[in-house]
Length: 138
Image (cartoon, rainbow, N blue to C red; front, side):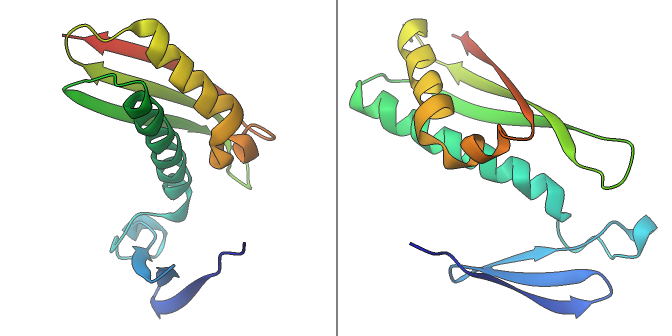
């Protein structure tokens, strides 16, 4: 299977990127020549990671019939100071709200996502330190 995305220059630093028929506009911040019409490209790497691992965890918990009231995944990426500025560390937080959520089952789903199913995490781990925590509140 192949995926092809296309970036079309729109103005100054802005590009419209066709991602499998969906449009995503990226742009630079005003202080570096853009107009702030969309997110810069690098944080979209974090978005890809939280989307990928989040979908894995939701799928696995659904199969385990684990219910929750709310679920969020956040990613905090640390960039190098020197060019090319790149993420050298990403910390994920899996945040659940609900009653009687079994920590061990959530931990198992997260581990499977991180070690087996999330292709984004698999690629990133080759160059970036990935860490995570799981938070469950009522």
